[in-house]
Image (cartoon, rainbow, N blue to C red; front, side, top):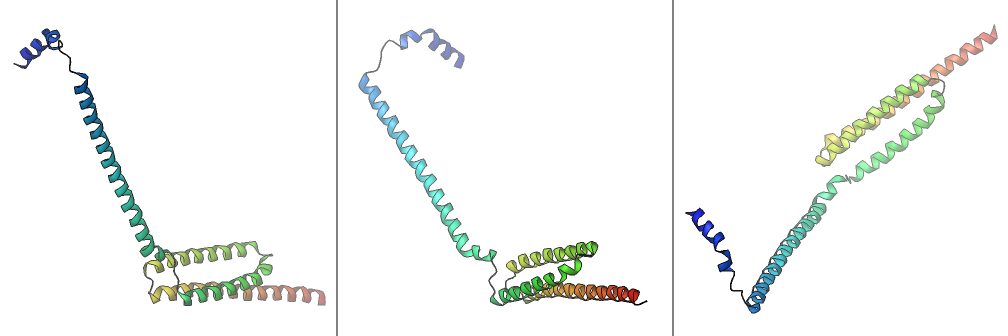
Length: 175
């Protein structure tokens, strides 16, 4: 049935095109189409603006409430970090001249301190998740103490080694 209707319309198309609609009809149709487009466009833009506003507000709220979690602001920890950092710097300055004669020992020390530093960074990340966890704070301080112990042992060892070398040199000259 569909084919018969389609064939009829095709065969008699010129009969359908005899009358043309008036210009007023076309202008009325155009006005209605333009209103629909403007309405659809403004509706679409208002939705996009609402989504953007919700997104921006949620980012601001997230930053306000969760943004502070990235930074750990514990006064006691900051004080301990400052103290131990200064002490470690002082010990490093004390060790550097003694290590100039022993590059393998210097490499081992750098490796140990780098490893302890990476462990400290992991502890710091863990502290962000567990801000009030005393165990994490104690582990961080213990990490600093371990660095200082390593540096102090290095100074003691190198001082002893240098003294032994000097004594050996002096005993050779005494003979």
